[in-house]
Amino acid sequence: MSDQGVIGGLVPGTWHTYRPRMFTAGNGGEVQPVLDDVGDVKYQFGRYNLIDKSLVVCEFQTQFIGAFSIGSGSAYVFELPFPAKRWSGYGSEARIPIGSGMCYLSFYNAPNPALNIPVIPTLADPFPSLGGGENRFFQAYAPYIYDSGTFTFKNAGSGGTTTQTFTHDAKFAFASRDIEIVCGITSGNTWWPLAVNNITSTTFDLVSPQGTPNVNVTGSYKIRAEPPTGQFGALVSPIVPFDWARAMTLSPFGNFFFHLIYEAA
Amino acid sequence: MNRGNLLGLGAELAWRNYDPKLAGFVAPAHTAPTQPAVGGTATAQGRFVKTASGLVVCQGRIVFDSNSTFGSGDDVWGVSLPFPANRSSGGADEPLGVGWAWQGTGAAPQLSMQLVPTLMDALQFGGQQSNEDYYLQLFNPYLLSTGTGAFTSGSTTVTVTHGLGHTPAAYDILVVPTNSPSTAPGEIYVDTIGSSSFAVHVRSSATTTPVTFAWKVRAEPNSSASFDLLVNSLRPWAWASGHQLSWHVTYEARR
Image (cartoon, rainbow over all chains, first blue to last red):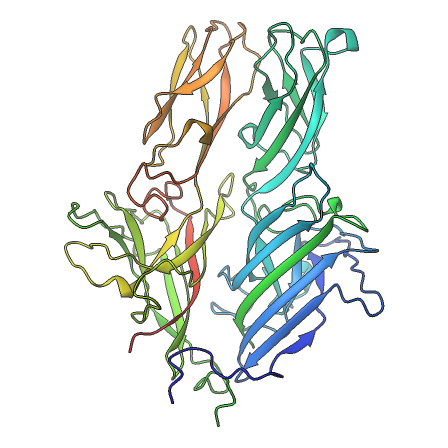
Protein backbone atom coordinates (compact mmCIF):
# COMPACT_ATOMS: atom_id res chain seq x y z
CA MET A 1 0.00 0.00 0.00
CA SER A 2 1.40 3.38 -0.96
CA ASP A 3 2.35 5.56 1.96
CA GLN A 4 1.47 8.68 -0.03
CA GLY A 5 4.87 10.26 0.22
CA VAL A 6 5.12 10.35 3.97
CA ILE A 7 8.15 8.83 5.65
CA GLY A 8 6.28 5.79 6.78
CA GLY A 9 7.12 3.11 9.23
CA LEU A 10 10.03 4.66 11.06
CA VAL A 11 9.95 1.93 13.62
CA PRO A 12 11.52 2.41 17.01
CA GLY A 13 15.19 1.65 16.99
CA THR A 14 16.13 3.32 13.74
CA TRP A 15 17.39 6.43 15.51
CA HIS A 16 20.98 6.24 16.65
CA THR A 17 22.56 8.51 19.21
CA TYR A 18 25.95 10.10 18.88
CA ARG A 19 27.97 12.54 20.93
CA PRO A 20 28.07 15.77 18.95
CA ARG A 21 31.17 17.92 19.11
CA MET A 22 31.82 21.51 18.20
CA PHE A 23 35.03 23.29 17.37
CA THR A 24 36.32 26.69 16.42
CA ALA A 25 37.71 26.98 12.91
CA GLY A 26 39.46 29.57 10.80
CA ASN A 27 42.87 30.40 9.42
CA GLY A 28 44.79 29.02 12.38
CA GLY A 29 45.48 29.95 15.98
CA GLU A 30 42.05 28.92 17.25
CA VAL A 31 41.41 28.08 20.87
CA GLN A 32 38.99 25.19 21.07
CA PRO A 33 35.85 25.37 23.20
CA VAL A 34 35.42 23.05 26.13
CA LEU A 35 32.03 21.44 26.69
CA ASP A 36 31.03 19.88 29.96
CA ASP A 37 29.54 16.42 29.94
CA VAL A 38 29.89 15.16 33.43
CA GLY A 39 28.91 11.69 34.53
CA ASP A 40 25.43 10.59 33.66
CA VAL A 41 24.17 14.05 32.87
CA LYS A 42 24.21 14.44 29.11
CA TYR A 43 24.14 18.03 27.99
CA GLN A 44 25.40 17.28 24.51
CA PHE A 45 22.88 15.32 22.50
CA GLY A 46 22.80 14.06 18.98
CA ARG A 47 20.81 11.50 17.12
CA TYR A 48 20.43 10.57 13.51
CA ASN A 49 18.48 8.37 11.22
CA LEU A 50 20.34 6.98 8.25
CA ILE A 51 17.88 6.34 5.46
CA ASP A 52 18.94 3.60 3.08
CA LYS A 53 22.61 4.26 3.88
CA SER A 54 22.53 7.67 2.23
CA LEU A 55 20.10 10.26 3.57
CA VAL A 56 20.82 11.47 7.06
CA VAL A 57 18.22 13.13 9.27
CA CYS A 58 20.11 14.55 12.21
CA GLU A 59 19.09 16.31 15.41
CA PHE A 60 21.87 18.07 17.26
CA GLN A 61 22.21 19.89 20.55
CA THR A 62 25.24 21.22 22.34
CA GLN A 63 25.31 23.41 25.42
CA PHE A 64 27.63 25.69 27.29
CA ILE A 65 26.79 24.59 30.80
CA GLY A 66 28.71 23.57 33.87
CA ALA A 67 32.47 23.83 33.44
CA PHE A 68 32.96 25.14 29.95
CA SER A 69 34.88 27.65 27.88
CA ILE A 70 33.75 29.19 24.61
CA GLY A 71 37.12 29.18 22.87
CA SER A 72 38.14 31.65 20.17
CA GLY A 73 38.21 31.55 16.41
CA SER A 74 36.55 32.80 13.27
CA ALA A 75 33.63 30.36 13.28
CA TYR A 76 32.10 27.51 15.18
CA VAL A 77 31.83 24.25 13.26
CA PHE A 78 29.72 21.35 14.41
CA GLU A 79 30.47 17.72 13.75
CA LEU A 80 28.13 15.62 11.62
CA PRO A 81 27.43 11.98 12.42
CA PHE A 82 28.66 11.09 8.92
CA PRO A 83 30.76 13.09 6.49
CA ALA A 84 28.58 14.81 3.95
CA LYS A 85 28.58 14.54 0.23
CA ARG A 86 28.64 17.99 -1.25
CA TRP A 87 26.59 18.95 -4.21
CA SER A 88 28.89 21.34 -5.97
CA GLY A 89 32.16 19.58 -5.72
CA TYR A 90 34.39 18.16 -3.08
CA GLY A 91 36.03 20.81 -0.97
CA SER A 92 34.01 23.63 -2.45
CA GLU A 93 32.18 26.15 -0.35
CA ALA A 94 28.62 24.93 -0.68
CA ARG A 95 26.36 27.42 1.03
CA ILE A 96 23.09 25.62 0.65
CA PRO A 97 20.83 25.42 3.70
CA ILE A 98 20.72 21.90 5.06
CA GLY A 99 18.13 22.45 7.75
CA SER A 100 17.27 24.83 10.54
CA GLY A 101 18.92 25.93 13.73
CA MET A 102 18.70 28.15 16.77
CA CYS A 103 21.16 29.86 19.08
CA TYR A 104 19.47 30.10 22.44
CA LEU A 105 20.59 31.72 25.66
CA SER A 106 18.24 30.14 28.13
CA PHE A 107 17.25 31.00 31.70
CA TYR A 108 18.72 34.44 31.49
CA ASN A 109 17.82 36.53 34.52
CA ALA A 110 15.51 39.45 33.87
CA PRO A 111 15.81 42.11 32.61
CA ASN A 112 18.23 40.39 30.22
CA PRO A 113 16.47 38.83 27.27
CA ALA A 114 16.27 35.10 26.65
CA LEU A 115 18.05 35.42 23.34
CA ASN A 116 16.62 33.07 20.76
CA ILE A 117 18.03 33.67 17.34
CA PRO A 118 17.31 31.41 14.33
CA VAL A 119 20.36 30.54 12.29
CA ILE A 120 20.85 28.76 8.98
CA PRO A 121 23.11 25.71 8.84
CA THR A 122 25.22 24.92 5.77
CA LEU A 123 28.11 22.56 5.26
CA ALA A 124 31.36 24.03 6.53
CA ASP A 125 33.60 26.23 4.45
CA PRO A 126 37.02 24.73 3.72
CA PHE A 127 38.73 26.52 6.59
CA PRO A 128 42.49 25.94 6.67
CA SER A 129 42.30 24.77 10.27
CA LEU A 130 40.07 21.86 9.22
CA GLY A 131 42.85 20.43 7.12
CA GLY A 132 40.61 19.26 4.30
CA GLY A 133 38.10 17.66 6.65
CA GLU A 134 35.34 20.22 6.12
CA ASN A 135 32.89 17.58 4.90
CA ARG A 136 32.65 16.33 8.46
CA PHE A 137 31.27 19.63 9.73
CA PHE A 138 28.57 22.19 9.33
CA GLN A 139 28.46 25.88 10.17
CA ALA A 140 25.63 28.35 10.64
CA TYR A 141 24.78 31.87 9.47
CA ALA A 142 23.26 34.41 11.83
CA PRO A 143 20.85 37.13 10.67
CA TYR A 144 22.23 39.75 13.04
CA ILE A 145 24.54 40.29 15.98
CA TYR A 146 23.08 41.32 19.31
CA ASP A 147 24.17 43.18 22.38
CA SER A 148 22.40 45.35 24.90
CA GLY A 149 23.24 47.21 28.05
CA THR A 150 22.89 50.36 30.08
CA PHE A 151 24.85 53.56 30.48
CA THR A 152 24.84 56.74 32.54
CA PHE A 153 25.41 60.00 30.72
CA LYS A 154 26.92 62.15 33.43
CA ASN A 155 26.25 65.77 34.15
CA ALA A 156 29.08 68.25 34.46
CA GLY A 157 29.05 68.01 38.24
CA SER A 158 29.83 64.32 38.01
CA GLY A 159 32.65 64.90 35.59
CA GLY A 160 30.58 64.47 32.46
CA THR A 161 31.43 66.13 29.18
CA THR A 162 29.53 66.53 25.93
CA THR A 163 31.22 63.40 24.57
CA GLN A 164 31.23 60.30 26.75
CA THR A 165 32.54 56.84 25.95
CA PHE A 166 30.75 53.63 26.84
CA THR A 167 31.63 49.98 26.38
CA HIS A 168 29.67 47.40 24.44
CA ASP A 169 29.97 43.67 23.95
CA ALA A 170 29.23 43.27 20.26
CA LYS A 171 32.92 42.56 19.71
CA PHE A 172 33.10 44.42 16.40
CA ALA A 173 32.74 47.99 15.13
CA PHE A 174 29.11 47.99 14.08
CA ALA A 175 27.43 50.82 12.16
CA SER A 176 25.73 53.74 13.85
CA ARG A 177 22.38 52.65 12.45
CA ASP A 178 22.68 49.34 14.31
CA ILE A 179 22.32 50.89 17.76
CA GLU A 180 19.24 52.23 19.48
CA ILE A 181 19.65 54.59 22.41
CA VAL A 182 16.87 55.18 24.88
CA CYS A 183 17.25 57.51 27.83
CA GLY A 184 15.56 57.27 31.18
CA ILE A 185 14.95 60.19 33.55
CA THR A 186 14.45 63.60 32.09
CA SER A 187 17.05 66.28 32.52
CA GLY A 188 15.96 69.75 33.51
CA ASN A 189 17.81 71.32 30.59
CA THR A 190 17.87 70.66 26.90
CA TRP A 191 20.76 68.40 26.09
CA TRP A 192 19.49 65.94 23.48
CA PRO A 193 19.45 64.49 20.87
CA LEU A 194 22.43 62.29 21.30
CA ALA A 195 24.65 61.37 18.40
CA VAL A 196 26.61 58.14 18.17
CA ASN A 197 30.18 58.44 17.09
CA ASN A 198 33.57 56.80 17.13
CA ILE A 199 32.42 53.18 17.26
CA THR A 200 35.12 50.63 17.91
CA SER A 201 35.05 46.90 18.59
CA THR A 202 34.58 47.61 22.29
CA THR A 203 33.28 51.15 22.75
CA PHE A 204 31.08 53.84 21.31
CA ASP A 205 30.76 57.54 22.02
CA LEU A 206 27.57 59.38 22.77
CA VAL A 207 27.74 63.03 21.87
CA SER A 208 25.47 65.74 23.17
CA PRO A 209 26.05 68.85 21.06
CA GLN A 210 23.77 70.89 23.30
CA GLY A 211 25.83 70.32 26.42
CA THR A 212 25.57 68.01 29.39
CA PRO A 213 22.32 67.31 31.23
CA ASN A 214 21.82 68.94 34.59
CA VAL A 215 21.46 65.51 36.23
CA ASN A 216 23.01 62.15 35.48
CA VAL A 217 20.80 60.53 32.89
CA THR A 218 20.57 56.77 32.74
CA GLY A 219 19.83 55.05 29.52
CA SER A 220 20.01 51.78 27.68
CA TYR A 221 21.19 50.67 24.30
CA LYS A 222 20.39 47.79 22.01
CA ILE A 223 22.67 46.74 19.21
CA ARG A 224 21.06 44.65 16.52
CA ALA A 225 23.79 44.77 13.95
CA GLU A 226 23.74 43.49 10.42
CA PRO A 227 26.72 41.16 10.00
CA PRO A 228 29.92 42.79 8.77
CA THR A 229 31.46 42.01 5.44
CA GLY A 230 33.78 39.07 4.92
CA GLN A 231 33.73 35.29 5.03
CA PHE A 232 33.35 35.16 8.78
CA GLY A 233 31.05 38.13 9.29
CA ALA A 234 27.78 36.25 9.64
CA LEU A 235 29.06 32.88 10.80
CA VAL A 236 28.10 31.67 14.25
CA SER A 237 31.25 31.94 16.34
CA PRO A 238 32.26 32.70 19.93
CA ILE A 239 30.98 36.24 19.34
CA VAL A 240 28.13 35.67 16.87
CA PRO A 241 25.18 36.06 17.14
CA PHE A 242 26.10 37.29 20.62
CA ASP A 243 29.02 36.95 22.96
CA TRP A 244 28.70 33.38 24.15
CA ALA A 245 30.63 34.38 27.25
CA ARG A 246 27.22 35.54 28.50
CA ALA A 247 26.57 31.89 29.27
CA MET A 248 27.46 30.95 32.80
CA THR A 249 27.94 27.82 34.82
CA LEU A 250 24.51 27.77 36.43
CA SER A 251 22.64 30.06 34.01
CA PRO A 252 22.10 31.40 31.51
CA PHE A 253 22.99 28.38 29.42
CA GLY A 254 24.27 28.69 25.90
CA ASN A 255 22.54 26.29 23.53
CA PHE A 256 22.92 25.32 19.90
CA PHE A 257 20.02 23.37 18.34
CA PHE A 258 19.93 22.06 14.80
CA HIS A 259 17.76 19.86 12.59
CA LEU A 260 19.50 18.69 9.43
CA ILE A 261 18.86 16.63 6.33
CA TYR A 262 21.88 15.84 4.19
CA GLU A 263 23.46 13.15 2.07
CA ALA A 264 26.15 11.01 3.59
CA ALA A 265 29.36 10.63 1.59
CA MET B 1 10.96 -5.42 2.44
CA ASN B 2 9.98 -1.95 3.50
CA ARG B 3 11.60 -1.49 6.85
CA GLY B 4 10.11 1.94 7.06
CA ASN B 5 12.89 3.61 5.14
CA LEU B 6 12.52 5.76 2.07
CA LEU B 7 12.42 3.42 -0.86
CA GLY B 8 14.38 3.54 -4.01
CA LEU B 9 17.38 5.49 -2.88
CA GLY B 10 19.86 2.72 -3.34
CA ALA B 11 23.46 2.85 -2.29
CA GLU B 12 23.79 6.41 -3.54
CA LEU B 13 21.10 9.00 -3.46
CA ALA B 14 19.64 9.45 -6.92
CA TRP B 15 19.95 13.23 -6.96
CA ARG B 16 18.85 14.75 -10.18
CA ASN B 17 19.47 18.27 -11.33
CA TYR B 18 16.84 20.68 -12.51
CA ASP B 19 16.88 24.30 -13.61
CA PRO B 20 14.87 26.34 -11.11
CA LYS B 21 12.96 29.20 -12.65
CA LEU B 22 12.32 32.49 -10.93
CA ALA B 23 9.06 34.19 -11.85
CA GLY B 24 7.07 37.22 -10.79
CA PHE B 25 3.41 36.67 -9.88
CA VAL B 26 0.60 39.11 -9.34
CA ALA B 27 -2.80 38.94 -7.70
CA PRO B 28 -5.73 38.25 -10.02
CA ALA B 29 -6.73 41.14 -12.26
CA HIS B 30 -3.43 42.94 -11.73
CA THR B 31 -1.21 43.96 -14.62
CA ALA B 32 1.28 41.33 -15.69
CA PRO B 33 4.67 42.11 -14.13
CA THR B 34 8.01 42.54 -15.80
CA GLN B 35 9.68 39.21 -15.24
CA PRO B 36 13.02 38.79 -13.49
CA ALA B 37 15.87 37.24 -15.44
CA VAL B 38 18.63 35.48 -13.60
CA GLY B 39 21.08 36.12 -16.41
CA GLY B 40 23.30 33.93 -18.56
CA THR B 41 26.28 33.69 -16.25
CA ALA B 42 24.46 33.84 -12.95
CA THR B 43 23.89 30.67 -10.98
CA ALA B 44 20.52 28.96 -10.84
CA GLN B 45 20.94 25.43 -9.58
CA GLY B 46 18.46 22.92 -8.29
CA ARG B 47 18.55 19.28 -7.40
CA PHE B 48 16.10 16.82 -5.97
CA VAL B 49 15.56 13.32 -4.77
CA LYS B 50 12.16 11.77 -5.44
CA THR B 51 11.27 8.57 -3.74
CA ALA B 52 9.04 5.91 -5.17
CA SER B 53 6.41 6.81 -2.63
CA GLY B 54 6.36 10.42 -3.84
CA LEU B 55 8.39 12.37 -1.28
CA VAL B 56 10.63 15.03 -2.80
CA VAL B 57 13.67 16.55 -1.09
CA CYS B 58 14.70 19.60 -3.08
CA GLN B 59 17.58 22.05 -2.70
CA GLY B 60 18.51 25.00 -4.80
CA ARG B 61 20.09 28.39 -5.03
CA ILE B 62 20.06 31.41 -7.27
CA VAL B 63 23.12 33.64 -7.12
CA PHE B 64 22.52 36.86 -9.02
CA ASP B 65 25.20 38.64 -10.95
CA SER B 66 25.59 41.78 -13.05
CA ASN B 67 23.57 40.20 -15.86
CA SER B 68 20.57 39.63 -13.63
CA THR B 69 17.46 41.75 -13.72
CA PHE B 70 14.93 41.59 -10.95
CA GLY B 71 11.64 42.47 -12.56
CA SER B 72 9.04 44.98 -11.48
CA GLY B 73 5.35 45.27 -10.81
CA ASP B 74 5.38 41.87 -9.17
CA ASP B 75 3.56 40.98 -5.98
CA VAL B 76 5.47 37.80 -5.26
CA TRP B 77 8.46 35.85 -6.55
CA GLY B 78 7.93 32.17 -7.18
CA VAL B 79 10.68 29.60 -7.46
CA SER B 80 9.83 26.56 -9.55
CA LEU B 81 9.80 23.07 -8.11
CA PRO B 82 10.98 19.96 -9.94
CA PHE B 83 7.52 18.40 -9.56
CA PRO B 84 4.16 19.99 -8.81
CA ALA B 85 3.21 19.54 -5.21
CA ASN B 86 0.32 17.77 -3.59
CA ARG B 87 -1.08 20.20 -1.06
CA SER B 88 -1.93 18.96 2.37
CA SER B 89 -5.12 20.90 2.95
CA GLY B 90 -6.07 22.52 -0.31
CA GLY B 91 -4.48 25.75 0.83
CA ALA B 92 -0.97 27.00 1.37
CA ASP B 93 1.31 28.61 3.95
CA GLU B 94 2.51 25.44 5.60
CA PRO B 95 6.32 25.60 5.88
CA LEU B 96 8.12 23.18 3.60
CA GLY B 97 11.60 23.65 4.99
CA VAL B 98 14.00 26.59 5.12
CA GLY B 99 14.83 29.47 2.83
CA TRP B 100 17.64 32.00 2.98
CA ALA B 101 18.15 35.46 1.56
CA TRP B 102 21.75 36.57 1.80
CA GLN B 103 23.78 39.34 0.24
CA GLY B 104 27.05 37.41 0.18
CA THR B 105 30.36 37.88 1.95
CA GLY B 106 31.29 40.80 -0.27
CA ALA B 107 28.39 42.98 0.82
CA ALA B 108 28.93 45.56 3.54
CA PRO B 109 27.01 44.83 5.65
CA GLN B 110 26.14 41.35 4.46
CA LEU B 111 22.43 41.25 5.14
CA SER B 112 21.20 37.76 5.93
CA MET B 113 17.65 36.67 6.56
CA GLN B 114 15.96 33.34 7.15
CA LEU B 115 12.85 32.88 5.03
CA VAL B 116 9.95 30.45 5.34
CA PRO B 117 9.13 28.60 2.10
CA THR B 118 5.57 27.51 1.40
CA LEU B 119 3.68 26.49 -1.69
CA MET B 120 2.62 29.40 -3.86
CA ASP B 121 -0.64 31.23 -3.34
CA ALA B 122 -3.10 31.02 -6.21
CA LEU B 123 -1.76 34.00 -8.14
CA GLN B 124 -1.48 35.02 -11.74
CA PHE B 125 1.58 34.74 -13.85
CA GLY B 126 1.30 36.59 -17.08
CA GLY B 127 -2.38 35.74 -17.35
CA GLN B 128 -2.00 32.06 -16.57
CA GLN B 129 -3.44 30.56 -13.45
CA SER B 130 -3.64 27.24 -11.63
CA ASN B 131 0.08 26.62 -11.80
CA GLU B 132 0.68 27.53 -8.19
CA ASP B 133 1.48 23.93 -7.29
CA TYR B 134 4.60 24.22 -9.43
CA TYR B 135 6.12 27.01 -7.35
CA LEU B 136 7.17 27.88 -3.86
CA GLN B 137 7.00 31.32 -2.36
CA LEU B 138 9.01 32.64 0.56
CA PHE B 139 7.82 34.56 3.59
CA ASN B 140 10.09 37.30 4.89
CA PRO B 141 9.79 38.09 8.61
CA TYR B 142 10.67 41.75 8.01
CA LEU B 143 11.99 44.10 5.34
CA LEU B 144 15.39 45.65 5.64
CA SER B 145 17.20 48.64 4.23
CA THR B 146 20.09 50.73 5.55
CA GLY B 147 22.01 53.82 4.59
CA THR B 148 23.39 57.19 5.59
CA GLY B 149 22.25 60.74 5.03
CA ALA B 150 23.17 64.34 5.63
CA PHE B 151 21.43 67.67 5.85
CA THR B 152 22.64 70.38 3.56
CA SER B 153 23.80 73.70 4.91
CA GLY B 154 20.89 75.67 6.31
CA SER B 155 18.31 72.97 5.65
CA THR B 156 15.93 71.47 8.20
CA THR B 157 14.64 68.68 5.96
CA VAL B 158 16.22 65.92 3.94
CA THR B 159 14.55 63.13 2.00
CA VAL B 160 15.88 59.60 2.29
CA THR B 161 15.22 56.96 -0.34
CA HIS B 162 14.75 53.61 1.35
CA GLY B 163 13.82 51.65 -1.80
CA LEU B 164 11.73 48.96 -0.15
CA GLY B 165 8.59 49.27 -2.28
CA HIS B 166 6.72 49.16 1.01
CA THR B 167 5.59 51.92 3.34
CA PRO B 168 7.13 51.37 6.78
CA ALA B 169 5.67 52.64 9.99
CA ALA B 170 7.49 55.40 11.86
CA TYR B 171 8.54 52.94 14.53
CA ASP B 172 10.27 50.84 11.88
CA ILE B 173 12.70 53.65 11.15
CA LEU B 174 15.81 54.28 13.17
CA VAL B 175 17.75 57.51 12.59
CA VAL B 176 20.99 57.92 14.47
CA PRO B 177 22.85 61.24 14.36
CA THR B 178 26.54 60.65 13.78
CA ASN B 179 28.23 64.00 14.30
CA SER B 180 28.23 67.09 16.45
CA PRO B 181 26.78 69.81 14.23
CA SER B 182 27.73 73.46 14.44
CA THR B 183 24.24 74.30 15.67
CA ALA B 184 22.30 72.13 18.07
CA PRO B 185 19.58 70.52 15.98
CA GLY B 186 16.91 70.17 18.64
CA GLU B 187 14.44 67.43 17.96
CA ILE B 188 15.09 65.02 15.08
CA TYR B 189 12.02 63.31 13.67
CA VAL B 190 10.65 61.57 10.57
CA ASP B 191 7.49 62.03 8.59
CA THR B 192 6.18 61.92 5.01
CA ILE B 193 6.78 58.20 4.98
CA GLY B 194 6.07 56.55 1.66
CA SER B 195 6.78 53.39 -0.27
CA SER B 196 10.14 54.66 -1.50
CA SER B 197 11.25 57.43 0.84
CA PHE B 198 10.81 59.25 4.12
CA ALA B 199 11.70 62.74 5.32
CA VAL B 200 14.00 63.50 8.24
CA HIS B 201 13.68 66.84 9.97
CA VAL B 202 15.61 68.84 12.54
CA ARG B 203 14.16 71.76 14.45
CA SER B 204 17.19 73.95 13.88
CA SER B 205 19.41 73.93 10.83
CA ALA B 206 23.17 74.25 10.89
CA THR B 207 25.23 76.17 8.36
CA THR B 208 28.86 75.29 8.98
CA THR B 209 28.50 71.66 9.99
CA PRO B 210 25.05 70.22 9.34
CA VAL B 211 23.80 67.03 10.92
CA THR B 212 24.87 63.71 9.42
CA PHE B 213 23.08 60.49 10.30
CA ALA B 214 22.79 56.79 9.71
CA TRP B 215 19.41 55.14 9.19
CA LYS B 216 17.91 51.68 9.16
CA VAL B 217 14.44 50.58 8.19
CA ARG B 218 13.59 47.22 9.72
CA ALA B 219 9.93 47.04 8.91
CA GLU B 220 7.41 44.47 9.93
CA PRO B 221 5.15 43.67 6.95
CA ASN B 222 2.07 45.84 7.38
CA SER B 223 -0.03 45.30 4.27
CA SER B 224 1.02 48.64 2.85
CA ALA B 225 1.92 46.75 -0.29
CA SER B 226 0.25 43.70 -1.77
CA PHE B 227 1.64 40.53 -0.28
CA ASP B 228 4.34 42.39 1.59
CA LEU B 229 5.06 39.33 3.68
CA LEU B 230 6.41 37.60 0.58
CA VAL B 231 9.74 37.90 -1.21
CA ASN B 232 9.68 39.80 -4.50
CA SER B 233 11.99 42.05 -6.46
CA LEU B 234 12.11 44.60 -3.62
CA ARG B 235 11.58 42.35 -0.63
CA PRO B 236 13.08 41.72 1.81
CA TRP B 237 15.46 44.23 0.22
CA ALA B 238 16.31 45.60 -3.20
CA TRP B 239 18.03 42.64 -4.83
CA ALA B 240 21.37 43.16 -6.56
CA SER B 241 24.35 41.38 -8.06
CA GLY B 242 26.04 39.00 -5.62
CA HIS B 243 22.90 38.31 -3.63
CA GLN B 244 21.75 34.75 -3.11
CA LEU B 245 18.35 33.15 -2.70
CA SER B 246 18.43 29.51 -1.59
CA TRP B 247 16.08 26.87 -0.25
CA HIS B 248 15.86 23.36 1.19
CA VAL B 249 12.38 21.86 1.16
CA THR B 250 10.64 18.53 1.57
CA TYR B 251 7.24 18.00 0.02
CA GLU B 252 4.94 15.45 -1.53
CA ALA B 253 4.75 15.30 -5.29
CA ARG B 254 1.36 15.45 -6.95
CA ARG B 255 0.21 12.13 -8.32
